[in-house]
Length: 224
Image (tube, rainbow, N blue to C red; front, side, top):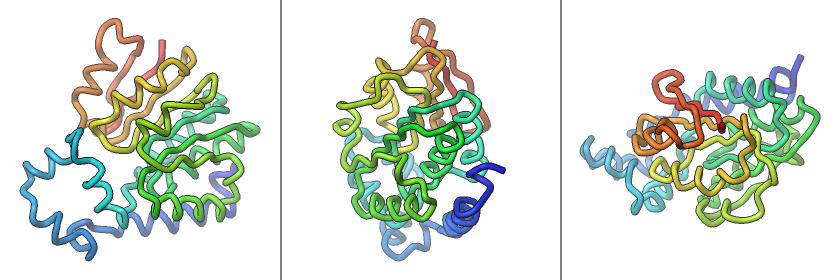
């Protein structure tokens, strides 16, 4: 038995993932008119934009934007298998991935998870979810733009980095954290198909990483 598969985490995650799976941006009142009024090209441009991400994700404050259940399990497996005790997460949202990672820290004997989210209402919901999961003691929440919140006071050695915030900032956040990533540290970028420059960066010869596509939308990399 593990923290991930027992109470209170297992039932909480099942409830949160069920709710997240049921959310449809196109029918959520607070964002539907805005989202449905955009063309597919404009939606793609906004997701990749380095200038409009604060407005876009601010409008998505009621949308979970969570990792999938399978990705949550993968995060737990990666953190457990590496014995991670120090994790950084870009993009907390409602905290589903945060719970999976913190559960791994608990089962690894403890540690510190630094997670950054700029939307205040999402930070509040994530804190409540982590408290219900009885994992809040392992998590340091940083509210604000990750380019500022993750620029200071990082753990001396980081075992795992999750990139799941504004896609256009993946390379920037990786660069902020890179000097603290230990050799062998893992980087998981969710929805990496929306950020080709990041994928090109971590796959480039001499980048300091070895990287492969993992499923259709995940890029999994190791710090060399």
